Image (cartoon, rainbow, N blue to C red; front, side, top):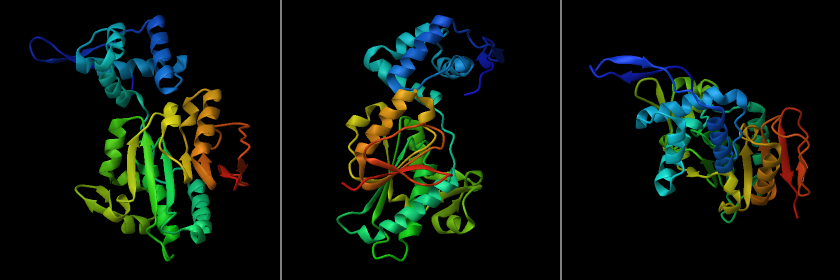
Length: 296
């Protein structure tokens, strides 16, 4: 999603640079409102050029010349809903990495090891990555769970669910293959244990681990409809920063409803300030923003 110039085909078949269309103040406002209404994402005035570049990339694919015409297409009934889904792949940020913010995963490891006595065939551990993007966080959660439960009576009793609004990101997550640079933050022993090389400089998550991870499309504005209950661990990192403060609290309150008693909620450091919930206790850790649901 980088602004700039695009290429257009001339009548003689040669390529020439074609400048991006200009977006009026009113057009930008219309797109701001649409994005917030449908996804909750807040686009500041400073990101106008970014929106313009992202929209233009999709508009060129459809040979649409102006933002107002494309807006009408995106909001036009069922056909518009299909195009909206395609557009989201141009608009949503898909920047992530394995073990992003390592202190959070170190806390998770300690937490899971403490839950081992409770694990049984009637209560396997359930972990959820909210805003999973292309799957790196989800597989990181699975690796930590596999390591924590290794040697216990029930090493296989855990599952990870990753949810995201982007179908394109979810497709990449399900493929479970990544370039070598994406694995730079992973310990060498974990790479050997949980990944297998294939192709030129690429690695695929091994089937044993990948089979414990599933992915589903979910708009966080629709958490009330999400079929999740009794979740042991919820990671919601680097997502809330894109929402208004009141909506961040609303999302967190919905996530609390999905947590099991004693469940762990991990949030990106600095994403919320002074959030409190009567059912949640803050975890004493200077490097991680996390809460435990009270046993009731």
